[in-house]
Length: 268
Ligand code: HEC
Image 1 (tube, rainbow, N blue to C red):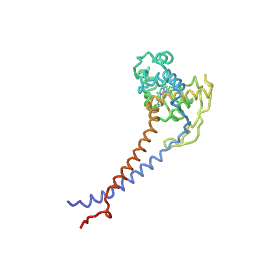
Image 2: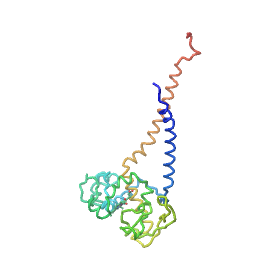
Image 3: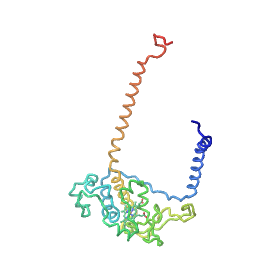
Image 4: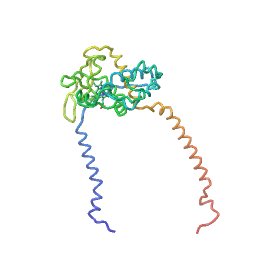
């Protein structure tokens, strides 16, 4: 069957159109730029059970007021934290829930809607999606902003709906503003914070606590991370051994293949 000429022409132009569209979309995206504040670097150690315990204590007593951590059950935490069941229930506790329950928020969604006009996301989901550096920057960079309903804003999350739950521990902070772009328009952008009032913790103490919270959240959101790190080198080793064996088998097969020069019969 002969293809109509017009459709042939169209099919020839299609890739070009697609390329042009991609370029236009790229240009449009590039023009809607927002100045990104720098993230605070952080190193977390998933083996550090003291850090995980401090993180668990703050997360289960502070954050669970609003956020759930439904990727975990209370019963999964003691082995992670290096505690026995009884010690875990005595020192950290399960908020009056059953030991094998998943960790859900203590606040009802309707109450949260009244309070912050949205139901906060599950922390397992957040920690699986955000990097530790982002979480650390977010937790340490709430600042006073009287224009917001909660009186607080955040360097990593512009116009965040979460109130500054750390005000008592960290003290209040004021933003370091620069001229930048927000969605392509010139705006004042917060790129850091400066202390305004003193909290119950020193600056270094609070940063260490925030790091512990990030460590705990990361460990809960990536429950197989340690196992992966342990297994990784062995799996790569297995592939190396398999590659060597496969190469040897390849040599063996080709040694037995009779090539043209070795043939004693003639193909006419
Ligand atoms: C008073 C309720 C409340 C408490 C307590 C609270 N949060 Fe939130 N949090 C919120 C709300 C509401 C949002 C949604 C913000 C938005 O989308 O604007 C949020 C958002 C977040 C985000 C960003 C989510 C995203 O979209 O990436 C992180 C991270 C977070 N919270 C961590 C924590 C941690 C860690 C704690 C405990 C130290 C905590 N929150 C305690 C209400 C709360």
